[in-house]
Length: 227
Image (cartoon, rainbow, N blue to C red; front, top):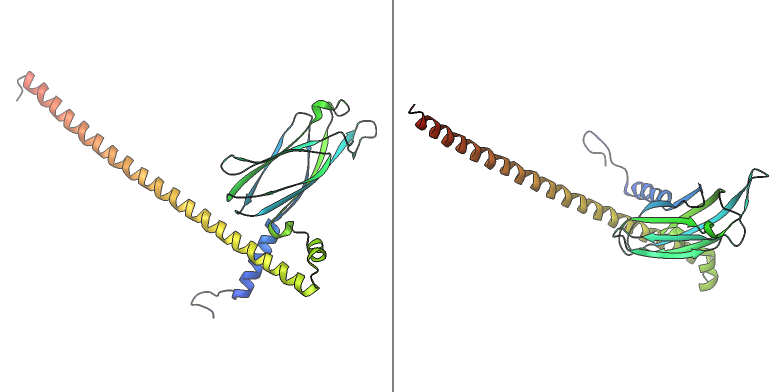
């Protein structure tokens, strides 16, 4: 029902928009270039108890053909993931193409870093590498055809499973947003309290300075026998 001076979206529409936002936020596909000693890091905001899957493949720059070609099997990528507290969640060496998986246990910004083992690859030394990276978060990381084959689910059961996973992911996103709001509120309250105490300290300092100046002037006048 429309309110005075405005209107509200129906609950189903709002839920659909939120689900679309989650879908957009839960998939990342990109590529980037790195040199033989470069390390590239990315920041992902991830709710707690959420599975993350990253798929990557590398291409090596061919100077003669001036084109990126599939990398040799000997070229590897090291993947390191840290949680918001700086704790290492994943640190492992992979091949030129692969997949890494981890589950978050702390909500917040997770740092995902990749770098090559190019120092051991004379063929790549001084060259350039293109890395294609696709990061999937939450229910988008699930392989539903594989789940359906493993659990022998019908199409209707599989669809119900997908909807349940989507609702669970939306709930995790909402919990994370509440966590961020609470953290921001605590930070604001702490800042306001510090500002208040600083104002009180300034007032006390000004009062003490005034008292000292008055006593100093009184002593000066008494020494000069002006009072």
